Image (cartoon, rainbow, N blue to C red):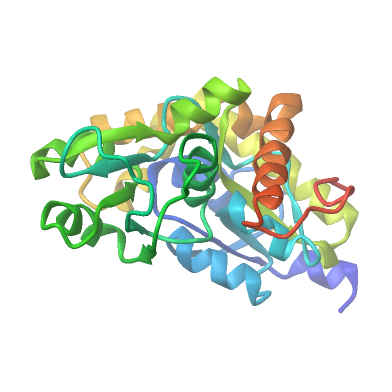
Length: 287
């Protein structure tokens, strides 16, 4: 297929139905960005898109930064469209307050997620004896498992930081607070990647188009509201707006120096702990 034919074909893209992603991609997905490549959109949660990236499926994907070391041979990290933030890190929850997790069993939603990497880095800094068994289970089962004593602790994300007290649980530690306190950097959450085979010209056009789509959403938030709420899974509009306000920020428009430092810092530290493959020196370079 020639480059010209590639440009005529819609790009196969998968991102989550979460408000931040639909807000970011609304204008682009609805052909309101002049000259932008057409998109064929599939909605999938990030644990699904991580696997798609490892299998080389789709042209463009929203993935966890934790999966980058395994996919950057085939995909390039785009400098925009993703999610980095502050004050939004995962939590470690326990049934009793002040538990020492040394040698204890911890439930996690995935071992290929930023949350898991942040947890292991926190444990390396604060638990010289190390944690015990790691149990992967569906996210919605973690807090009940901790409450019922099936595991000693659970690693939770997103809305669980607002609901864990309903389960009678205690916050042992905030992984985001630890990361920000020790690095001063934002928390790398979700990345936008695109196949290198699209070529430098198409990749740059895609990145410019995403930036334009983000700016259009900021300029006229109401224009994206129908798309956001259609996929927000009965989320209250006020909560959706708070979600967007937290995860769509200056790093979404451009990673910038601090954004790239956060990504490289997370993955370099994680590689030093043997949690991910080492990054090549040029792995994060954008064409």
